[in-house]
Length: 206
Image 1 (cartoon, rainbow, N blue to C red):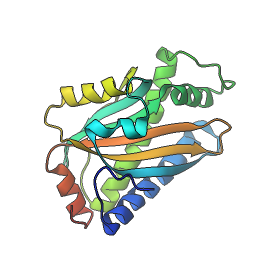
Image 2: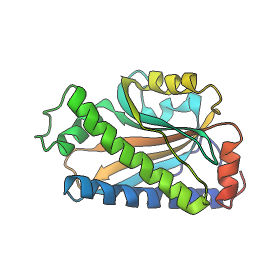
Image 3: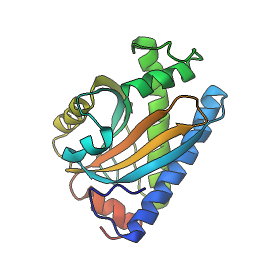
Image 4: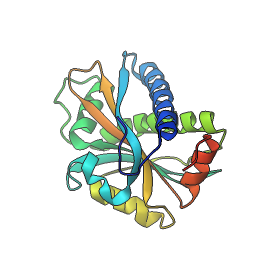
């Protein structure tokens, strides 16, 4: 289901859906190799969101979240993050560390290390999908992790990188075949004009 914060034409929707499908395919393969468990991942929503309207998909910008983030350079510059609601981050940590559901309630060093590893895998999967379809070079730096309110995390990314634009390519993901829901959001915030460069490289006009 496309997000509608920025109006997209049918071709843009189709291309972004392909990015989402290829990215989730890469992610599932990598997660299966990491954990030895079988996963499937769905994409309930995707689109291009205005930064100040993220509350419409995150639900509550003051709710705790965990985010793995990194800058992206190359042909399209910006910042990329994978944002997990706090409950989902704890549930995912239980899966990654082979714990009984509900064991993880606080994200400390071990838990953050596991989340940063899987977040890096998920981000790389979507960046590789974008790169494969656009033929753009999108090298990223080593990831960092933040535990804070969702709104504060997004604000800090924009503050650290003041040249970022006011729109973000957003892909909502949900791990399936798990007893408890694990949701997350891939968020790519490009610098001004970079979104247009990306769309043009994907063969669509913004």
